[in-house]
Length: 166
Image 1 (spheres, rainbow, N blue to C red):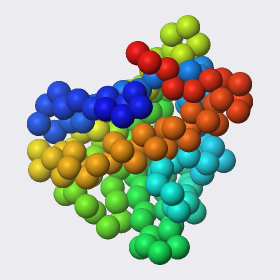
Image 2 (image 1 turned 120 degrees about the horizontal axis):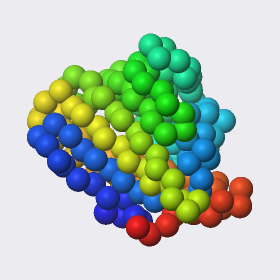
Image 3 (image 1 turned 90 degrees about the vertical axis):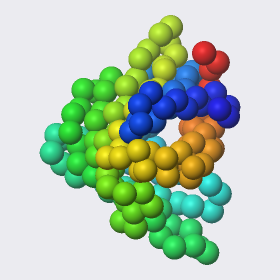
Image 4 (image 1 turned 45 degrees about the horizontal axis):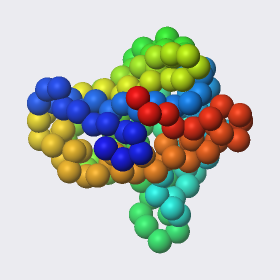
């Protein structure tokens, strides 16, 4: 755990990450589904930019992200929207152009609001234990938390606050 992000493995193929935000659910939803906001925070490591962001909030539609860094190889990923229940639940597949784990993942984001704060829960279901274990060893949660810290600053600038302890 770093900065409030918790990581759990409830099964051999799942990773569940949770984190509180001092922002209403609608704002957290928008930050995860609107390209103008995604480009400000998604993928936390310095020097990377979200150069391509295509999000169509229609069941069956594809989404696509491409990150660029001036000194590193481009990284792209995308998938298909499976379920959309704004601003509460988003289910989508995830597969990288240059796969670093086997198969694809099914990502389920659930946002629960309580007293103006939002609990973000992301469940990633992998096709195999091997895929889950590779993802766990990658340190992806560290990059996510760096991005979430940027998101806290965006929320604070909007007057919505930042990270909140559970």
